[in-house]
Length: 640
Image 1 (tube, rainbow, N blue to C red):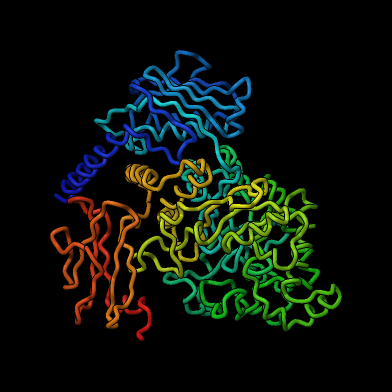
Image 2: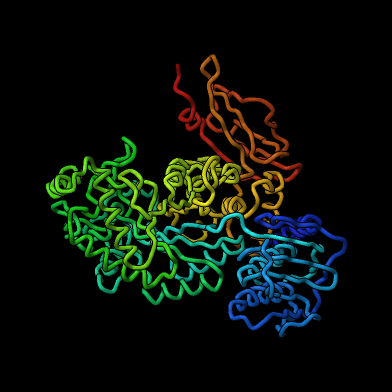
């Protein structure tokens, strides 16, 4: 009986989503929005025997494999590949004469009732054209198993498309919590669907060193392992000496080579980050001689316990010294070894060396640092770090790479050829660009996708919020800045509070859709209502793909103020138009037959709980939110 109920429930979901996808075919729901697209008369119906024609170019293998998988498995069609032929169902054509409008990553996609043609100057363009093509099909195309009773047809369209920015990145923090090689591949597969081309791997931090350095084996023998903890990261109790340090992992050099090739096959470059001189506890634990503070040989790799005091803001006050010592020549010998091996493993032109959130209080007490300052005529700790960064740049350049760091590297005087990744808002990026340095924008207020994306009562808690609507407002090119210095942008997924891949998906999507569109699509094409209509189509796709995503955009935004009489006043709104909010204060569970929000609410005198839910028409779309009145009191301005 239980199985029968489950089958009926799935059928009901399928019927609902089928209705949505059938309607959506009238308006193609491609993310990111193409440069131009016209919907022509007619439909293309996928035949029982699909023939893909393509040249023998080796870089087309992944595009062909992608199309074969998506067009064969869910549809139960036969898909074969042939040499170039005008009679094929789908033709992939590399231009013999360059189409200047398309550049290296652009494409033209033409769908007629007879066939489908994708043209591009380079194989990457054909790959991105294939992504757009699959998004034209009904959402069931995402299923990993055959789906019956679907009309496998798409609208006839003419698309001309190319990216706005060359750097379209996602940062994946694999240090705070380790993600396996196969999980990183899954992350790459998800990101390329939305035309991202840069994976920034945050490989080292206080919680773990994740890349094998053969000349420094303790980095992974010791530095890759800590004690498993669950709960709220940063508040864990310090691990006892006898607790097993078996949680973590690292990538062997063979793993890295495999990931680099996997990404390259999908037209993704991997940017490695070795975060120094702060965030270096895992390295210091492995090699205590890298510190300039006595006693570090007693330190352990962090398991999420508090090691910084952030009460005064940045830079933090370190409770233990997690930094490499700029006054220690062994540090530069160490980094030379690390970067020699990193440079050989990653073909990408940049190496990212962090530079963020470096505490200074232990440096201030160090006699070695004081001697360095006197010798080099350094005025303060920012200049001490600037000295370190300039020496890092020389090592990076000697390996044939370019140096990149977070925007703190500006504070001590920027190394001559350094590129800046601006995370503390746009200010650092603007300053760097004005100094004629290359910049990648990834500001916290638009692009930090580890932040909560809905109400704290229902979201995994972290110290800040970033809703989908705000992420969609990301504009990487500030007014008055020379565009030639803005390489593009990226979203950052820090994983202090992210323990597994399902949660990583939840945090990345749909905000990853928003950042993708800001980096690919023309600024003038962006429209929040249109974008969200397409997002809902992709929610349905994710249901069929069984991928996780956050529905937080449907849920109420709660603004808590106080009335002149010092009572709580609750103003409710939604990111999405056309939703109704229903509520209760009586501890019962609201539906659309309960009171509907029409004006600010004042909780009854003895009420203990507010419950909220959103509907579109007669269907619930948001999750039920339950908030104690005491929690709302904490959010309100202090009583007068």
